[in-house]
Amino acid sequence: MTSTVLITGANGSLAIHTVQHLLSNQADKFLLLTVRDLSDQDLNTQKLRSVLSAVPGAKYSIRQLDLSSLAAVEQFSSSIVDEVSKGMLPKLESIICNAYYWNLTRDLETTTDGYEKTFQVTFLAHVALVLRLLGSFGPSVGRIVLFSSDAHWPGKNSLEKYPPAIPDENIDSLVKPGPDTPADNMGKGFQRYATSKLAVVTWMYALNRSLEKDPQLKNITAVAINPGNLSDSRALRVNTPKGLQFMSKYIVQPLRPLLRFVDATMRTSKEAGIDVAKLATGQVFPGERGYFTLLKKDTSSPDSLQEATQQRLWEKSLDWARITADNTSLRL
Image 1 (tube, one colour):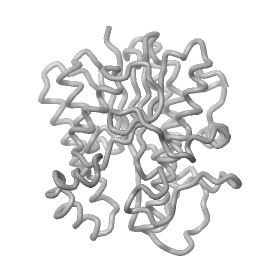
Image 2 (cartoon, helix red, strand yellow):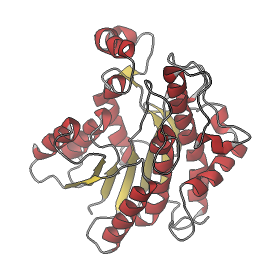
Image 3 (cartoon, one colour):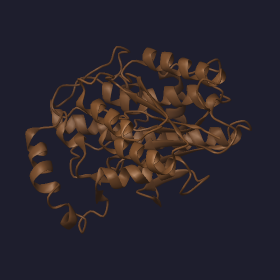
């Protein structure tokens, strides 16, 4: 029976390879692909359409979704719930939360919701999306794939200048931080990205606990994957300083085979995209929950494993994302 795989940021470096793998190996899946810009003026969306059109009979729909607007997430989710309930879309099998945002070159940015943009797009909007769509999963095994990074673990990423953290007090500073002190676009921008990834992993544990307790949804498992340091990722060329762009083009990509001896997670977007496709559809680790590095079950950072922090972030995320018993099937 056909089922739907939903991918956010589907025109991204990794996601396009996930799409290609699913088209080639699991043609029965219906691919629901979201992008911020639907037009062919966006070269990445144009590339996604090219990949899809190369496969005769491919079953897919490309939809616009701006994760920097919670109203847009709510509208999109309501539409999908309605289409699934009416049989216009197959029930969900997987949600792949691939989209993210970072800004390493400019001052702190906020969304129309008044929230810090990196945190909202990378983490909070996916919270709103996932929790609103849980009731649209089919009765068989379902999977939610969240994206982490070695950056979530303080001290592990070479770009880190200020460590990521979920504060014990004033947790609202995650969504409404004060001005950067000192002013440091690269350092503070990367810290916001790393903190968003820490939030993703921390929240994943609380989500799994809630799913396991729910008789109707316990068949759905959530995983957070560090897909590796992707040498050819477009991320290294967008909203990044020229020095990082130069390093990516002239050092990291050409020397990737050698750099793997220093960093075992150094690889291509294609390799990572295939792994994500397999993880999302249960080809590997069916029914497993938790944290992965590449396709190996792993232990996440000590900070992310603090159950009190997990619960505090869970409760605040419901509030920030405007999730209530009326718009999620999960028992709150």
